[in-house]
Amino acid sequence: MLSIRSSTTRPRLRRVRALAAFGLALACSVALTSCGSGDSGSGGDGKTLRLWHYEAANSAMGAAWNEAIKEFEAGHPGVKVKLEEKSFDQIQKTASMVLGSDAAPDVMEYNKGDATAGLLSKQGLLTDMSAEVGRRGWDKLLPPSVTTTSRYSPAGKMGSGKWYGVPNYGEYLMAYYNEDLFKKYGIKIPKTFDELTTALREFKQHGVTPLANSGAEYVAHQYLYQLALTKADRAWVDDYELKGRADFHDAAWTYAAETFSDWVKKGYISKNTTSATAENAGVSWLQQKSPIIFSGSWWFGRFQDEAKFGWSSGVFPGASLTAGSGGNLWVVPAKSRNKQLAYDFIDITMSKKIQNMLGNKGGVPVAADASAIKDPKSKELIDHFNSLTKNDGLAYYPDWPVAGYYETLVSQTQRLMTGSATPDTYLDALQAAYDKGASKG
Image (cartoon, rainbow, N blue to C red; front, top):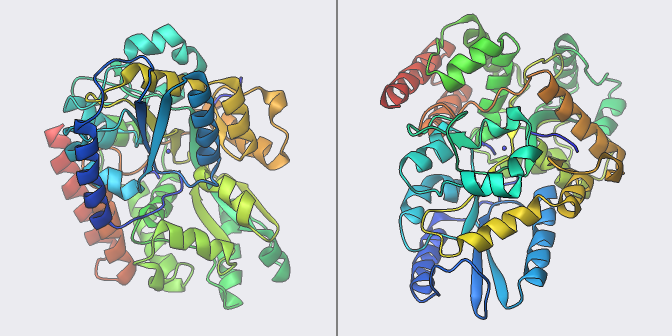
């Protein structure tokens, strides 16, 4: 079995659609759901399993889950899966409203953490799956470092309590390198943090902006969080993520804010990316506009599919702690009309066939056969993740601790990029929002 550990955040590849279009889709969903069948969990003529996720079709997860849909329908005659692809932001911003209505899907992908799955569990919007997890043995497939994000207390704090979600893959932030550009300019692919800063400086001397970035979504503040992690330890992570204790003017956060600001000033990160999306950042790397992007393993399958140049990847140079966790969760909304069908679908995504496919497509599976993973790049991806889990190196994501913190991190990091906030005032703003959110927890 391959062990594993997705956001803000992760943020899996997000295909962003307009929220106005989502409003129309929501209205249609309400109308359709009100006319649907009853609460029975067994299959039958006319049954529909409504599934929501936000993975690109050519991502590892998207490809594996499409195959899981085929397996599900083959094993449930008369039952059809109605897949509704949403964007990460759509679900992030509207989950409470949708799941509290009759438009709730039967099963959906949702972000893990106190501010997301924890919040919805506390609001009574998710189904407690503890009994089903034990009955189907899902808990036996997941290492402890992964199940942290599956279980939530009555207060919505992750790490203990009832099971409200099941991840079937792992994820972590990693550096992707365009080897052709490194060779073109005679620059060494970095293995240490000092070598990374040297590479950034040398690319800029050649007129190349070295780091692909997105200020409008998760990429920018994940750079900053990773910089903080280079000066942090496990106790620091647990205080920030799990205990509601953080000093944003400590050595780690101060270093991160000052270094990130300095990188923008030096042109390692372009100010023109302040309003760029995560999709923009990934495409700019694919178009060879920047030789490095630091983002999630959820990009891996797409980069395998679309990159027309030599590339490699690895954990952030010199890092012992890296943002990451178990993947986004399969959750079953409390208002799901077909819960047993939802559990059957989740079970299929945990099967050897789907897990092996996930690994070979560039994902990080939780229950694959090691011998079944043939692609060398995929093996390396999984090995890096397994090493992080073995050494307790997964540091979760920066937006997890309090509800609404993702939006705070995006907007405040944009201000830091434009220079309208100094590192000091930036950290003041993060502290104020964190303390306010933590006090409500």
